[in-house]
Length: 390
Image 1 (cartoon, rainbow, N blue to C red):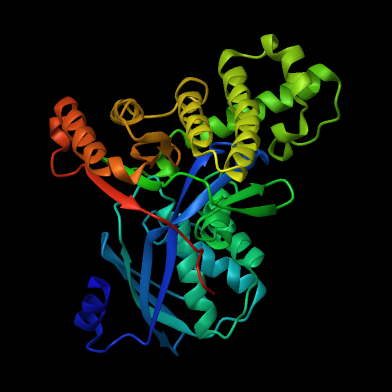
Image 2: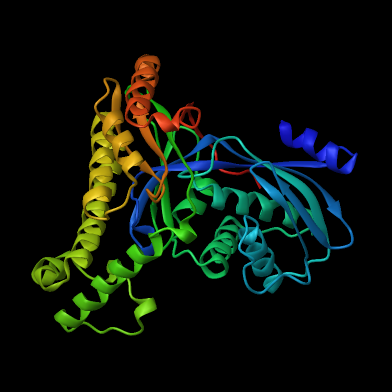
């Protein structure tokens, strides 16, 4: 790994530890976890590596192969507000961990991502792998749920992105060749095994060539719009409601939405429409996966992608074009944007027998439409994997 060479170059020593956290994909369930919806997804066999040594003086010193600037802070003196760089997620995790446990040991480390940033929840992966490292050198043992909550605090409260638990949960709970079926309302989940009769499948990742940062995208605005729909629907129906920030669409029955949806501003109605239909797609998708019907599961993933475009109204011109190119290829069961849909990448469930033709055709068509992405566009074939080993 390049990160090992970089560590030796910086510190003239070999790292003591290597930690790895996989990326994730969510074929069905996007844009709903922050409203306590249901989701389904996989961890994949690509992700974030962190090589590191303990620093007894309590200093955290990190370099990333994806960013030029190194980051440094002390475990007992973490900035209380974000600094505006790539390491904010990790500062937030340090702060959250330090609120519950005594921290005395820092780390020096180098971070390496195996794929470009955007759409695979690299922010959650790097946060989780950092938490695992910091816990190891401080002799702290967290449960899976505690790691999810710590990483969620870093991204939601410290960095300021209105996310739910989808990303962290996929990267921790997942199991190879199983579908993670998670209800974010109560964190109950099921790992549904791949049926023996299921057709061969593989995960294709298609990078548009554009990277994105959720904190600077329209992500938070969409969350505010869907929460506004929930608040208004409760008021129309005479339901009890409290603070706006504590209002979630999962609390509003579908029948209430159908009765009052025409009173909502168009954007609020469309965001709510996505939530309710996505909820149904996740449930149908879980049953399709259970019976080994990957064609139906793939079709539902494609429908999820269309709803993300037309109801959630996300996606750059590049991503929309890439999505349309992918779903019309022979051998593609289905797919959608991966992540929030603001730049980043698309994912698809594909028949491995068609992989080479899919790879060649998508690249040819996409680069014909966006020649400026030559050298930036990338395809990667992946498999499902276990979540992080703690």
